[in-house]
Image: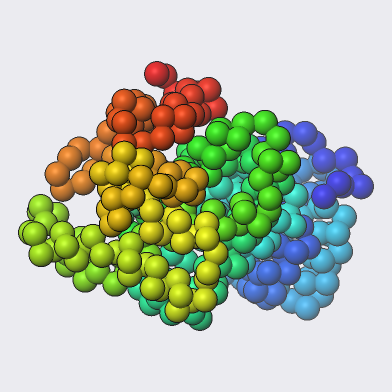
Length: 335
Ligand SMILES: [Fe+2]
Ligand SMILES: [Fe+2]
């Protein structure tokens, strides 16, 4: 929001100017965080409302007016409360011009991890629809400027869980794709294709939701029977897509092909024909498994994982090279 008032430059480092759309999303009488107003006569930000209090109707009206004038702020120290609040109404990130890129990345990470967990817990259409809506907010945001995916890749989870892994694959897969396409992303990739591949990256392991949790979360090596159960997750995932009426080839490729390998050593088909989305997702999947601690291996650094994949003939060489250069050039990691 451009203010009609003279707001000192340094203020935005400590405070966050709040817009009408965000203010309107709070509880009217009891906002969840402290609110400050800028007093022009003393050129300072002063407390307006303290959590625990209650605003009167007159104050609510005044607050709306002051917000319109760009004089209402919240403290960046309240970042966690703020992130949590917006993560429940994700579309606000598209309309609010005051959020910084890294704040938006925090909000997406939190919102999507929670939506994924809810869906894996209850893989039914009603829960899926909410996840889908939020995924489409993400694609809308990224399609405007694909370089925004870098802040997302800085926020990968380090602990393993199905939802954390799924989020990681989504974020990393998008970052890698931005590098593969490099310049002119939105000219080269249709919005529809973008939406579907992105969804596929996040949903690739949805079949794992049907694998009993005690197998999924087992910290010891799997028995033969358990391994067989786990290996059916690509097929189960495909069946789930049908039930959800999600019949997009790109999503199907992510779900069914992410364990295939280009030299025919993967599963379930041992097919050498892996489509683009399947290859991209396969690399994101292996990479994200390698960088979190697993029962049988310590976590690798991102550079180690990328290096290992680049020397592995089972993966698309061009893509694994792009992954290395993405980490070094775009993420500024030491090779
Ligand atoms: Fe998988
Ligand atoms: Fe996976």
